Length: 504
Image (cartoon, rainbow, N blue to C red; front, side, top):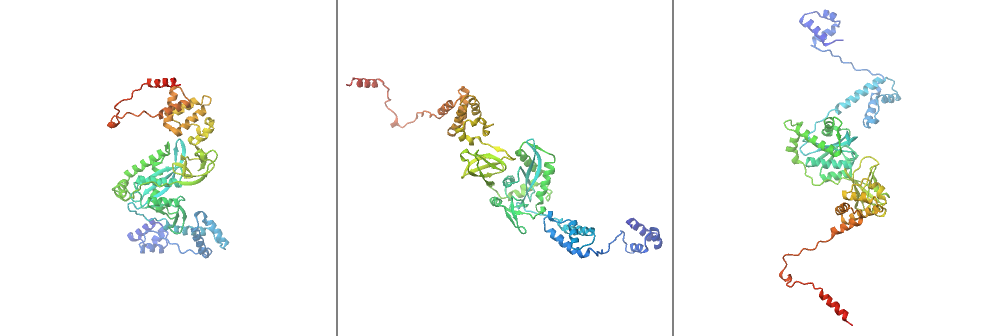
């Protein structure tokens, strides 16, 4: 095989040493035509161009194969045929050649199509023009339990300032909460938001860039006054900045499996890390300034100010069962027991659940995640307790009831005596008319006196409500001042009694 070393020896022998061409060809076992070629054309490297390949069997089927490939290109990736499947299709059409010819042509055709697809155009954004949004998943230890959390990523396109917040879901209410937190962190709203085609944002993909956005998402964009834009499917480079941020957070913030007590601790960690990164990392296009400096000096003043968060809840109609519970997101929540056996609307937020019936809030709880968990509010069951006080001992809503100290001590004493359950329920009922703090004070005082009973608590509450005697006014008008003070004389009444006795 001819190499550059052999060409060097041939050229040195002929040009420098004057060796005849025939001798050079004999010595290096080359044809004289090959030696002449590298001496005449000053070629220093071997070059071989394969002549046009003749394909007697495959040639008539090339056009059909390319039509099949063009059709597959419009189909989803998982529906596209492999080279073997295309080979079998050509065989059914009469092709009698080898599989290698088909496979080679398929590989070359795809390489030609992907040559341009692999080239990306760098994007440039003005200050305050746009932000990008995306999700990622990370594995953490949360409260001692291995947990997969979803990280919402938001990034300002001009300054490259990052923001991250963690959730246990990627549902709509989490999206709205992430926007509010991000805009609060940025202290304003850019003019445009760039997203992929996630279901919480895009309802239907139309022709080109046209999209049918989620109705509630559109309402949120209208509230914050930014224009939503969805990327072309499978074109992640259109939001490449936030895609890079996903890799940054994974490789730097969560390079090792971290442990946190709860989501609040995770989010505090993410905010501090984002700020530390922005204050130390040079801007990729302005290397003389950090990301934070570009944000503070150029972009912050261009963002639109916002006043109130968007009421971003997800609403669902539910049925209240006979135990005053509703079921939502595979978990149960209690409601006011006076609303049993009717429908209500659940308004789910990122951190809480609100249950509304006939326009009135009948239950509010912190959001519960997981499955088959129940969130009780014992106060919802107070009307039932007044009729069934025996349920106080074993009722599920009343286990581990976090009552004020004075009321809790009174409960422990009353439940040890006969009829104590009803007395304690009466004490709880007094909260509706007197308030929690006065009842707690009266209960604590009754326990300290060693007189733990409802009658004593009620007596103490009545004393708290007794009106104090009005204080005498110091400065009265002259015509209201008594000149002759009244003197109490009981003998006057005795004389009246004597007269009534003497009467016939």
